[in-house]
Length: 233
Image 1 (tube, helix red, strand yellow):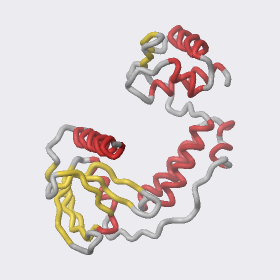
Image 2: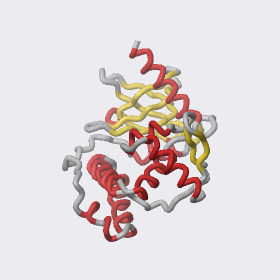
Image 3: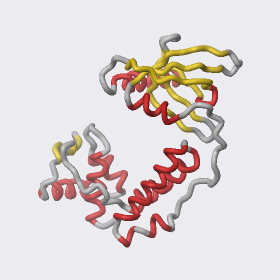
């Protein structure tokens, strides 16, 4: 790997986390020696990149530091293309169109030498679309999540029992054949999964969940980790 590519990769590793990253961890990912990472860190600091930390403790990048957003590597481009292909085949109408649009935008602004990685990528998602069975508009679900709004659901369980729930949606998940939302359920006073193909009717309420931005997601992440730790034992 060229030194310029190594330096760029180190910055990318540091940008993706808010925790200190050790030279050993970076060396393992980039597949170089720790000594090379130490030298590269020193070079980056000498070039004015705001990296703090020390050997044995780890390194952090100042979150205010920014780089041109489209300094993409071939691997990053192909990752975007692969993800866009998957979304185009499995997302709702708006997301499918957005996935195709983002690839077109990237193709229009990247250097000519990188364009083949979009036109003729070495990766590809399985073609074909999932036949949508949803009777609700998933755009509304995404809107409720973004705006921290509550949802009223008329929902059919796997035993065909219909119930009305008020939920606080956290995230809309996409699987190979189904979509679901993770939400705090006021009825059960716990997080629950609700499949979109079992939603008979939805209503985005004016009421918000009353939490600070990001709090609901953090609670869900803690809940998820607790469930994982219990299942491991």
